[in-house]
Length: 102
Image (cartoon, rainbow, N blue to C red; front, side):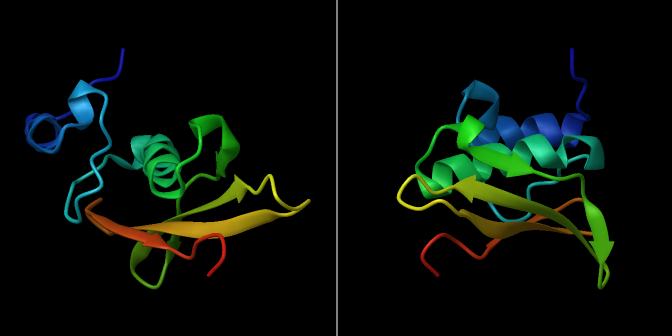
C-alpha cells in the first residue's frame, strides 16, 4: 500500500487522480518515489495510449529540476518517441516536454 502525505492526498482528490483520473495540474506535488508512475499515467493520458505503452526511467536531477525521461511506443513506426516529465525540486509537477510528432 502506498502512503501519501495529507497535502498530496488533498491535491489528488481535488484533481481527480485519487478516483482513477490523472492529476496533470501543474503544481501537483508528487513524492520522488512516485514520479515514474505519475509520469507514466500522465503521459498515457496525454498521448492517448495505454500505460503499458509508456516506459519511464527513475528521476534525475538536471538544472535544479527533477526530470523523468520516458518513451511512448509509436505503433506507426519502429521507433519510440521520447519525452520528459518535469518536476520542481520540491516535487511540484511542471508538465511534459516533447511529444510524438513534435
